[in-house]
Image (cartoon, rainbow, N blue to C red; front, side, top):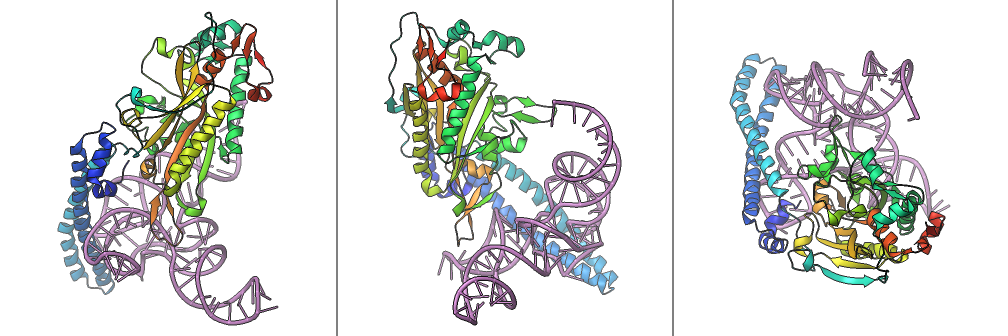
Length: 424
RNA sequence: GGAGAGGUGAGUGAGUGGCUGAAACUAACGGUUUGCUAAACCGUCGUACUGGGAAACUGGUACCGGGGGUUCGAAUCCCCCCCUCUCCGCCA
């Protein structure tokens, strides 16, 4: 969420920039400022009254020690009215703070100046393309059929065990998953990221910290008995490591990576577009997260994009990098690059990574701050994250593009990890 | 899950109703001293909100695991929850 002071000091600019994210609720911005004014007013009045109260209490203490019981009792009577006033202010304070908070979380992050204007995915800007689309014979199979043909990927079995969207990988299919995870982690570690293996369930505080709660509650599986949530991405536990933390400038940047399964309820669409591995409820992903100084966050974003690009190149997949337009960007992001790989049998671009700079939007919610040497005040860090990478669609593309009459050819980079060259 | 002990600032740890935003020590930072290192000594050493001020700075309020309560007044008393440790039970 944005800070009130930022909104206050840059009201017109904020409105103008948010318009590019199709956010035009000017009244929310006004409400925020009005509520914040009121909050300050109450704070001042209530604090003054509390100061009076504290002074009287001190007096009473002294009077009692001096044995002046009568005067002490008189002083006590004076507190009754004060106490009531303080209580009323306290109630209003709770109310105003709650409303302010509620309103504040409705305002999306402001987009970076370089974000293309546009409403939908069609307005996104392709910044780079790489790799070569294979030419497949007419009878080329989509990955779900290949899975059946070679018996390494089983949706029916997942259906039996759990339900739709929970595929089972078998034999070399399972091995391929493990290979990709190891490859991605090794690459991240080589690029200076520290590996974490976080819990796969998080509490409410963490859900709030990264913005899944309270609004997007339906995206996560909820274990109600223990009030824990299955993580939809490693971003949640990993970023929350830095919740309520004050860092020093020397500690930045902090680079973390984590492999986790991800669980998404995805109540959304079914049908042709989401067949096979294109959209599932549980999948594996390696995530990279950086906590950085505000001055360097955009350079960091480019670094992370380059890192992800290196991965798809090494996997020899045809890919393109897309800069999201204002209308297609997430609520929390200031600038996002999506990576898409081409699945040649489906003849579709599939999104496999989303690399974003959140600037201080997420940090404000997390209360992750840092101090410059010699500076007494804390400042919000910038946070970034990206998938590096999400497996299912990578696998889909890999399988479809590399199919041959004698099996599916594994890219050379992966062979040391899989231990086999052909998936057959 | 049962029984007991406990959760205080970066760390150790004192504090059982007012003189405590919190002793003392350690660490850290700045300085004095010193041929160098060490030691010694002095000072600084939490966060958030808020009033004043251009700022340096300064006044106020809150915070001693979290939430509620008692009281004129709570780190301190009461209730609920969370967590840690020891013992027992169960278990990969």
